[in-house]
Image (spheres, helix red, strand yellow):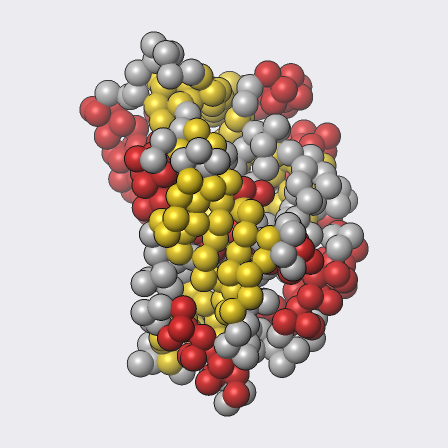
Amino acid sequence: MSATWTNWGRNQTCHPARVEVPRDVEELATTVARASADGTRVKAVGSGHSFTPVATTDGVHVRLDHLSGILTADTVTGRVTVGAGTPLHVLNPALQALGLALPNLGDIDRQTISGAIATGTHGSGARYQGIASAVTGLVLVLADGTVLRCSATLEPEVFAAARVGLGALGVVTEVELQCVPAFRLHAQEHGADLHDVLSSVDDDVARHDHVDMHWFPHTDRVLVKHNDRVGEDSAGRPLPAWRATLDDDLLSNRFFEVVNRVSTRWPRIVPRLNQLTSRTLSARDYTDDSWKVFCSPRQVRFRESEYAVPRAAAGDVVRALRDWVDRHDVSLPFPVELRFTGADDIWLSTGYERDNAYVAVHQYHRMDDGGVFAAFEAIVAEHQGRPHWGKLHTLGADRLAELYPRFGDFLGVRDRLDPGRTFTNDHLRHVLGD
């Protein structure tokens, strides 16, 4: 069957010649091998939460809906194998039922596990890494239909490349994860002044397990979120149901959608609306299962650009962005997000051998960005900014090769696994070269 595909952010559309939903790995392998032999491109697609065209194709779109769920689990070692099409919002409670959890998560759980790792989805925590760092093994279907397993000891170079593989090496069918015992987080959220936050950000990040900051443009208001791991004997309680509904449904989604629609019609009132919005989100203090704290419902659609910069550059980047916004006629109703993670060893991870701060700029999907994305990209360029692979950016292969020390090694693995470029598209030709 053919179809028109559009991503969640409504900024990427493609018209694949066929959409295939294989029932098992064998059917997937046959589909890929047949397409490759015909010279047809193949792209696996998950939930469409990337803002780049990484999953677009005019060839065959492969959906992994049937390759989903927990396949094996060892509750003693914490090793769990899951189907690549498993959405995080399905995986997290399934792991909880086994007494396990992923070590870290982002703030959205709609992605499939394979899509999340392919684009380097991360969370926050100076002593923690992105989701791909929990991966201990992968199974891929290659262009000729063969099935390849890789880990730190089995095809280690493929493993180093494929954990954040951009869908350029093959179709991932299984993901083995090193989970940790299920844990709870004590969440503390409060408003603060931007200048105060930036002056103490290093101490803040060192003192708390997970720090997430939301600066409201056109104001000096910041929503600060501290999430700290606590034992099972902690006396903390989850948010009351009424408070969760008020904050996460009515204010953060329904009311915020109204705010953005009003902003679209009358963009000049955005500074006043941001003052209002930043103050409707009052202080909160609660304790709950890790994934329930990490992940929040995000129903208001947006576009996003996010870059990782060395942690020491966080304040300079945010201040420069604030100065640019103040000097230009731009309306940004969405907050700018600031998070932090530790270094890892994954070749195309934004955290490769570097402790990072992540700065993310959002714009409502119905509004023009007013040049802020380009300005933001110019600011982070002065700090060796590495773009999130699933977020908007314009960098090409030449610049990316300067930012990633193992970029050439990744291309070497790609040449070996997919010499005919079955899994390419225009976007990958831009970011990886031909």
